[in-house]
Length: 171
Ligand SMILES: Cc1cc2nc3c(=O)[nH]c(=O)nc-3n(C[C@H](O)[C@H](O)[C@H](O)COP(=O)(O)O)c2cc1C
Ligand SMILES: Nc1ncnc2c1ncn2[C@@H]1O[C@H](COP(=O)(O)OP(=O)(O)OP(=O)(O)O)[C@@H](O)[C@H]1O
Image (cartoon, rainbow, N blue to C red; front, side):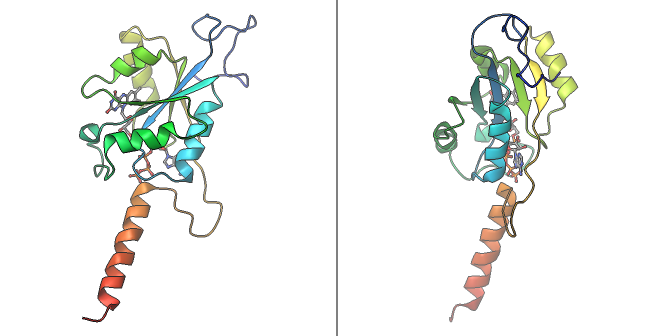
């Protein structure tokens, strides 16, 4: 499951796979309109390895909530530009494990509210012959009045403001 303070390295310094290469952490998500909650998640994930790779969900695969407004490549490019991210990957159209095999992570870090179940994911990884721990990041709590820590909240506020303006402007 999770890792120790040194990110799960063994006495000999090797990582979960027993090799001496960098310990790879993997995060994933939609990342439509970036906000401090995303940064918190990615910093939490990055702290669990030497390198952070991120899979950005393809729009067509986002079926559990409203689809992102920003195009796939734009969302990937924004994640790739973050200092804390070593590499951002646009997810596979059909097989979620294709990029996982390419990245070969030591730990897959789920977001604090991500709808994936750790145990189910661990079982699916084992069944696919993928050797990676599964961990869950913490949530960022609001640090100041009005901080927007959800893409959905940002969109809702934008729509409310636009609606208010359109009703207050003279005909
Ligand atoms: C291990 C793992 C691999 C994934 N691989 C892909 C993928 O290849 N393509 C994709 O479109 N989504 C992939 N996803 C799904 C999305 O990245 C993300 O988990 C899902 O859309 C929920 O994102 P949200 O927390 O931003 O709502 C993967 C998720 C996990 C946990
Ligand atoms: N406030 C937050 N604190 C920590 N992690 C967060 C926070 N908000 C989002 N995340 C994480 O960022 C990842 C990407 O989330 P996503 O792109 O769905 O953003 P979101 O703001 O949660 O979107 P939505 O509001 O549409 O659900 C997920 O793993 C999610 O858990």
